[in-house]
Length: 259
Length: 291
Image: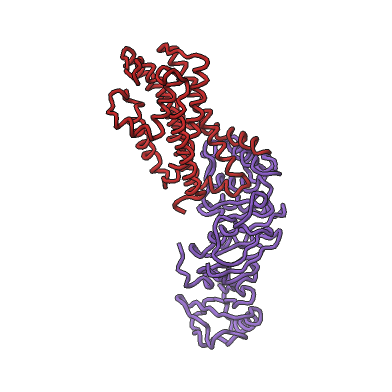
């Protein structure tokens, strides 16, 4: 098989595992969907002042719940999957086969991208059907491109984080801590206009807020001076992905930590 | 490891025996290419495992000490996934048949018993149709039935002409499966040979033992040809005597002649060759690494 068809082969099985894992399904799809319905309902009559533009509560939360889903797919699910594969010896087992690392990484990235796109579709449809958040065709394209770039970048960060966690038991709680803190200071749960400027500045150099800003722009370009793509923000996200990948390459291990 | 020399011939099953901590897994991992050696020269299938690429890995099969099935895939899916990694895999059905997993084809990997999971490990090692298979303690923690089933699978691999490098700390496993045994202790190979001859097992002393008839003492026994030591080596509780001799036949002849002449039955006489376990315990004595 060529490398491309091997990646497709691997992704088929990785996706199957993802779909059969109730924890993966729950955290990546159910949680963002539930929070979208909850926050969208609670804040449906609120209007937030966001970068000088007034946007309704449900329009604020839709892009952010998509970002939450993308972060869950990568920083939560992928990290736990990677740590589990390494610590159970499944990764080492695959190292004993001729399979190339690029195939395994490709499988992880494709699985994450497919999951992220499913989240984009489901949440966008719910946002439109329940809260009437409209989207143009161009906007939809921007949302998808933004989601694909964000997911790929956060996969890189996930690979880096996975090298820092040494046991399966620690993976779940650590990932929750990272996710919750990062999301909270990035305006995912709490409207950003309530934040002091310095907190937004800190969040802006971390990967989640720039992705949320870019996703918001794709849904509502008024927040980005009329442009669908917030390239400077996407660049920050992509830089995190590259940095994460480089860090992971240096520290990567096929074998369990407690061998 | 303190420097070992070993060679495995094509089509051979070599058992690598040793107490825990003797260096079995370290050696295996060096041969599998998982671990860098600090010194020495290693060639596996003509290639240095440390620098071997995918082509080399396509020719070996590995059963690691810890099993790691893809728990959310079925047995068939797991095998199909691994089959995709190899240039010329065996058919999934054939491997299922070889490892006795046909009935478990559609079971999820996490629903298999310990023995079935181990056989799945063997199946994954086989799927690429390797020339050389590493089996690291394939039956540790098994019940006797599961062990026998795994032994049958390994014997089947011999019939396929595979070369097998087996590590184990079970004597009976080595004796049942191996063409050749190497015993490792404290990082050195202390013995090497066939199960019948290793450690001088074939030329080692035979132990003749029996219970002394009433009223007789050990001193009254005849001196047997080749007897090791002046007197019977030990007189144990209940008047049991053990005599070590290099050649059992002349000694037995002399002993039974004496017994017949004196009208003594020696009803519980037994003749024992040294077991592989005796050899193993003698050779690994002093290596503290035991479980």
